[in-house]
Image (cartoon, rainbow over all chains, first blue to last red; front, side, top):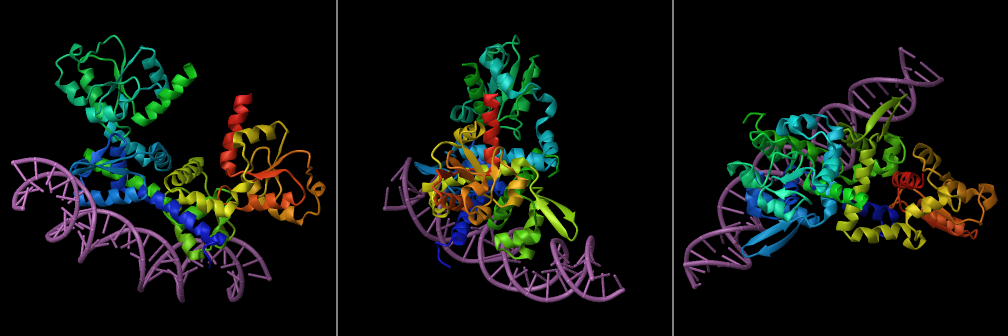
Length: 228
Length: 228
DNA sequence: TGATTATTCAAGCAAACTATTGAATAATTG
DNA sequence: CAATTATTCAATAGTTTGCTTGAATAATCA
């Protein structure tokens, strides 16, 4: 059994491949990936947001980093983890898609979180086109750290916190004259839904998008390419 | 802690998502998926081709089927497993791509199996266009069962076995007048490389493709769409 | 019906994974 | 330098996997 035998080489290949898949095969790690897809974080921040212990998150991060799914850089006492490779985000989206197709229960669970009646009916590409043409307004309701780290082209960064603090629309630089769309982290995030509810109390014509910032940018660049 | 609490719902979602990822997180299961991507098989055939025991393969298949990645149908005493959902194949390809980007060692291992000097230099889309225009010939060198189950548009099904049995080119309906390209299961398969070597002994101008049948069909349909 | 074939089931064991705990490390601050 | 902060490390317990073995099942055929 030499290492140069085809069967042996193939064994090694399939082991490497499954090692990468393994990085995605834990709820805790997926939560971490989803958060890092928005903006880099320290271990402690990730622990807080995922609800896992610091040591546990640290261990998962080491697994992710070993698979090169995340990278890490020092910043004083802290270590900032991030997802560098866009293909990782792509796979993460693909996975969500596939999972929803394979397991119908996921759609129901998603519905419980985000209130589908608030979803925009037009396809995201159409909305991005309208936004680009100035016929609609797109709001990024994530916290500033995230909207700054992974901005969506054409979106105004107005966090849910800001929306709730504001006394009126004018204060936020918004008007009732155009339809408004709101984005957040993606399909399992309820920030945009809450933002829609907040804006509707002011009589806005407003809906949420389910697409993630990553997806929206891809869609937007497609729109741009087609238009140019 | 009610099930209706957002945190609880989210927990359930991430568990379902990781369960799907888990289906891909084992070398044995990936081998099975790769084979089923070519054509349906019985448990015994899969065991033989993967080099795993029948009971072991059966157990992996049950895991895959539980995740709805594979489906199963009776045929006499046998049970025929298959991959029905094209998204599964898409993810499998994406995974290979990502893994190669994350782990450079994979490229080297792939090279050991397939002899990169035999690879076609033009992009597959260009080759598919030439084939479609009748300026080049594309051969599917997989065994008949596979080329019949997942045919590649425009490809002639001439298995490596047939190629090796033949006494001359004419017998196979081939000529030296056009460049020849050979496809097989994909990047970790050496059938096409062996076919290239066989055809070169007859003086053919022949190269292999690394893309899988699934990828090639996607590329071909893109080519067709653009041309029409 | 009984024998054959293909597959699953059930039990068992070693290895790997997850999350916990408390100690160790390493950069920063007073 | 000592204290603080952020993270990792090491040891551990409880689960879950992966694979093996041998028996059980279920469809087919003589």
